[in-house]
Length: 297
Ligand code: ADP
Ligand code: MG
Image 1 (cartoon, helix red, strand yellow):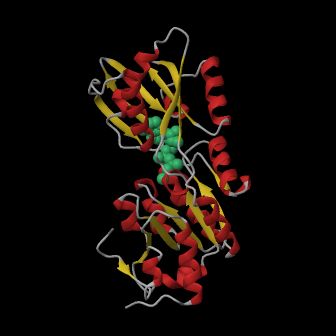
Image 2 (cartoon, rainbow, N blue to C red):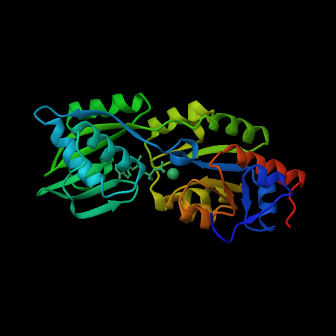
Image 3 (tube, rainbow, N blue to C red):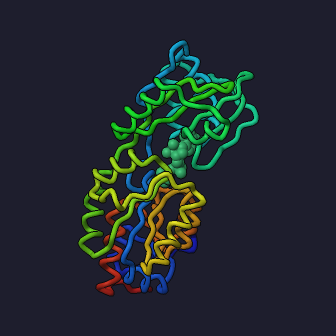
């Protein structure tokens, strides 16, 4: 947690695991009528697992794992960690090549050179930037994964798409209750994510957010624009997030709530920290602010 955060509440806020930066935050906590929830790491655990590898015909699955695993090993993204760990497990070794010219492409994936191959791992859109198309069989594999609520990650090297990786993370068991409580308090919950629409809708359905309140395929830098657009509609916007990607949106929102289990960047940008990473504490904070049970000591 950040040193600028203050523990508030005569016992209650502290007990509930809510840290607030100062008394001026309470006004906006009380007024919030819309709550934007980041998906990965906020509504879901963010702990991704590699569930399947769908290699194109003629492509060796072990080669997919070796090149994709090596490249993702250089990234700290939850998906990257799942791919790297899953590859190591399936290959039976953690001794993978070290990528050269590695670059993280925020919201899209990673790129770099592994063993002389120019490798891309990420969204189909990352491949599109290099004019690499997804062949029919891989497009089908992607659709099947997404329909099942999984995130499909594409692997390409040397200008050709080679495989689809299926990764997924679980919805936190407290998220559905939190959404129901936020709704009871009169707030409109909105799910915001860089992930694709089908996966986002599957997660939304699981926690009780309607499809019309899902904003998917949003690049990290555009999350701020989504918050501003909602504010322009006259809403008082609270935003909950955990990632570096969410920091600007948390700072722009009328009320920024950071997951205490998230990155320092998010915690620093937020007005309030949900220490235990439990979304129900967002509902507690709003409820308490309305009851004016919060007092600063
Ligand atoms: P969120 O907004 O849900 O927290 P991000 O903005 O971090 O997600 O990522 C959006 C999407 O970009 C992911 O769902 C994934 O498809 C792709 N992506 C981002 N980073 C990586 C990576 N290192 N490897 C593979 N795919 C990635
Ligand atoms: Mg996130």
